[in-house]
Image (cartoon, rainbow, N blue to C red; front, side, top):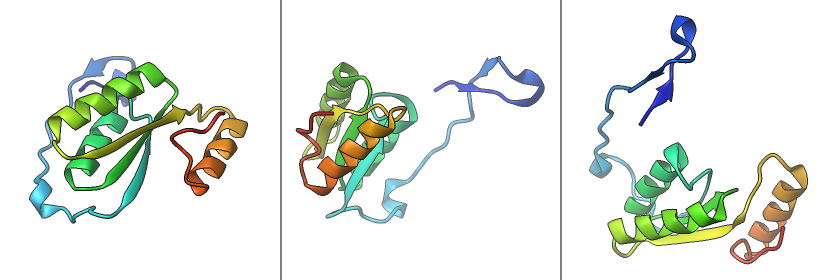
Length: 115
């Protein structure tokens, strides 16, 4: 993982210190539905992995639908029995797309909405 450093080092990439999480110390997410935006890669992807490992049904949303499918397959293969569901393309930069997605989510059709 690479992060952009702030302050006098702005613009230079640095590797952060590793952070270890003990999943057994976190509460179970069994029975919870979670939407993770930006989940095709990076922090969103790793958040989705952790939530899936904790038992949540994880809905993946991203602007890059090809990468979204790959992310879902990667999580499912790593975490056997996980319930990971890629949704439709979601562009958080377009208010109309966000509203349409929210309507589809509330109607239980987030995986098949046309935005």
